[in-house]
Image 1 (cartoon, protein in one colour):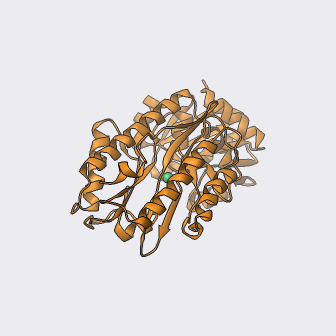
Image 2 (cartoon, protein in one colour; image 1 turned 90 degrees about the vertical axis):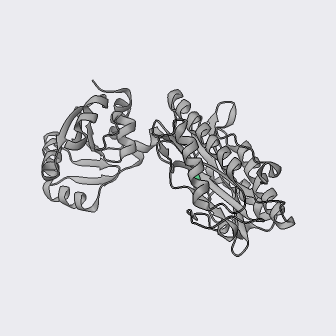
Image 3 (spheres, rainbow, N blue to C red; image 1 turned 60 degrees about the vertical axis):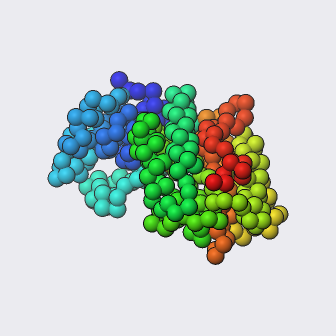
Length: 357
Ligand SMILES: [Mn+2]
């Protein structure tokens, strides 16, 4: 019996002019087959879907997978098993989301007169619009991130190290049910706050520092993404000026995260605010990205985005200003597009007074 999502996938495969499709990315296997087993899901309009799972994950795949027949493979016979299933379908054109170069070459040799075509949109398009159940999971993932950020606010003081800050958030979220951190945390203090992707070091936090914390939680495989910049003590005039600009950009952009809005336009509005205050050269990334089973997925809010927002999309709103040798500020929320406008899933405070510790 084919699951609803697999039925829709088959329509997309046909719409893209493909005879079969290989789903290989773990988040896509979760989405279409309902299992965290990984493996390769082979779908075609002509046959029952097959999930090839490694012997190690065969048992979990059998227990969890819906809408497909599960078969095991071992490393040695993986290529052979894929080839046998695909050859029976007699396809001319096979799409895939992602393939290693080795597998791409090996399959190309074995499947004669078959075109292998990268077609990630075929599987990604449906994932953009979150259904009610997914929205509930993402709401909880966002709450867990808020819990982690609150643990940080309680813990932050002069002299603690960045890695201790990260550990506090991680523990607070996991004891409330987060499965895993959504991605490696960023705790960027002092001059390091000028690095958008700073990681975490053993640096001790000092009075006067900006401390940018970028983190998220995973809940039932769904992610959240939350960034706040704390200020250690009383902000200087320049710190306050930068913080105010980023906050204004974040809040004005939030109101624009509406069904029908172009990703490029929402980015432009936030960027315009930062440019008009003279910090345009220091906003060095896009305004936001989609979130779901992956921490970065379509649609995007950026200078080059071709996306139009729809009800059910979940995107981040994360303007930032990064001044080398001085420091930086980023303020990020995870936002759901609803038919009554933007719904901020991460709820943590962002007024400057609430961020001074
Ligand atoms: Mn983000």
